[in-house]
Length: 113
Length: 114
Image (tube, rainbow over all chains, first blue to last red; front, side):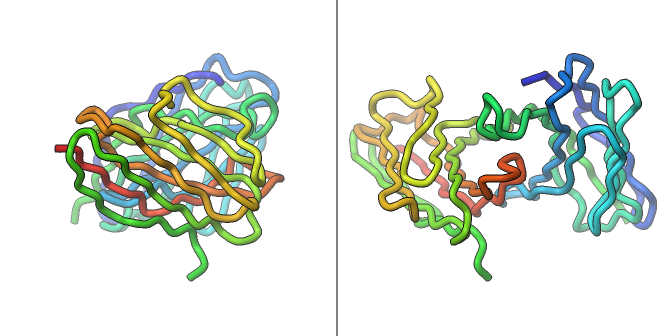
């Protein structure tokens, strides 16, 4: 699976949009971009995933660049409960990896009042 | 709530003892994964089941570790002759056959080996 690069930490004010970047310059054509988050002492939580097109669900939006070498997770109105470690993962979602997820260090997002 | 459950949530054991953890996946999910997470690191893949078949094991899974998923339902992870380096959070996740990258994680079992 392709490697990802994320900033180690970011801050965001409550109520503002949080934009979390991820670089995945070696992504291959059959690999999806997944985002998970992990709130302290809990298991990771699936947020969203995409292949080429931008995606939106009730939690977040995912913007993938046209060349697919980077993406941005957007939390439109961050709350204190969004404080967590956010992981950007590239996986071929089955294929040869069986959906195995390779987690990096992630980005620690701190939402402050 | 019919999410993924794990038991026990916490386990303290002495070095050399055997421990067993249980994971109950979401009922209609036929894929099940075990991960291990140490302090300050992201989760690391250990092993994967499709139904009752164990299809992949990480080299992190030494011969002291064994995992089973009888009848393709719950799974157990056993660690024999525990070592202090086994102290970690052990996470279980499950997914549908289609869309395996969308995994639902349990709360984890935190193991401390003294």
